Amino acid sequence: MPDTIDPSLFLPIGIIFLLLLMSAFFSGSETALTATSKARMHRLEGDGNLSARRVNLLIKDRERLIGAILLGNNLVNILATSIATSVFISMFGEGGLANAAATATMTLLVLVFAEVAPKTAAISRPDGFAMVVAPVMRWVVLIFAPVTRVVQVIVRGFLHVFGVDVSKDSAVFSAEEEIRGAIDLHHSEGRVDKEARDLIRGALDLNEIRTEEIMIHRKSIEMLDIDMPKDAIIRQALKSAHTRLPLYRENPDNIIGILHAKDLLRALWDAEGNAEAIDLEALAREPYFAPETTTLQEQLDAFKLKQEHFALIVDEYGALMGLVTLEDILEEIVGEIEDEYDSPVQGVRPQADGSVNVDGDVTIRDLNRAKDWNLPDEEAVTVAGLVIHEAQCIPDVGQTFSFHGYRFKILRRRRNQITALKITPIT
Image (cartoon, rainbow, N blue to C red):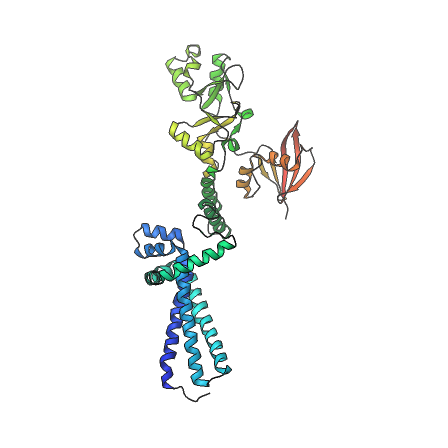
């Protein structure tokens, strides 16, 4: 090994360090531009941030961006290694020692200063780093565009042979699924509270939930028989906690109108309290029917268009299934809304041992939301329905089933209906 370095080697050594700086720039840029938040850049661009606009233009075509970065990074790394090999040959002479020294030295320098250090710095503040490097990377992408285009064609053709589709239209997850995944991740990390997570997920789920999944079942609907004495109808209507009550004739499937409490009070005032002077059928509003397969988003749009707050849900044969209100849909987003006439939410009773006693007609969605569980609701709407679906029978009192990470014990049953269960998470 020479005692002193030949002054003629100072220039190539300086070029090596310059190339390492360029490699560090490419490495950091790759990490920052791929890790930056697309949503945050979009918002910043909307606020007039020019740097964010440059970042958005770059990440719009990530394939071309990555191709240009990798091309530049490999060029400077290979060039730096070649020059380093020449320097070590000048220092040690021809032979394996020079090549080994060049390889070891460049591997260490590239790994520490051109890869790990810049990528660590970039990943710590990807948005700020991305906006800083975007102006330079814009020109790099333009200069390398012809080469990267050829590389893209070759890569896509090669991947196509193995059945891999990298087109822009081949996204596996929808935007809604990506948002759900992001909000669940932030919730698990403690950066988003449960209420905010449920609010966002509830809004995203409107297109996937049908009205039959949240409707009040027909057996729980409070109705008025038009053939009853008028004073009895009025008395029942005024005692009810609801402002809109269906009117039927002969049988509950024959709904002839919806009686609104405000209309009834106005008619009573005009009739000076004489119930017999009121024509209830003429006073009733026209009923609004909706099919059970309507999604909550479709029903919400229909409510706004028709200026309705109340819909009767029917099946494909026109038979009454239940009813859904505007408040029911809003509660799927914001959670339970209780006014002075509402009863507290019933049916979910936590026990001291960690189990939960649940009424059979509690919906799976309400239970999941209340306990932050993840029971599937694709095959059943209520908890009792889920147990019957999984058990493939109507279980007897005392029977216990385990599925989906929970133990279900039947507490009460009335005829063929499960009315109460005990649910215990299996740890």
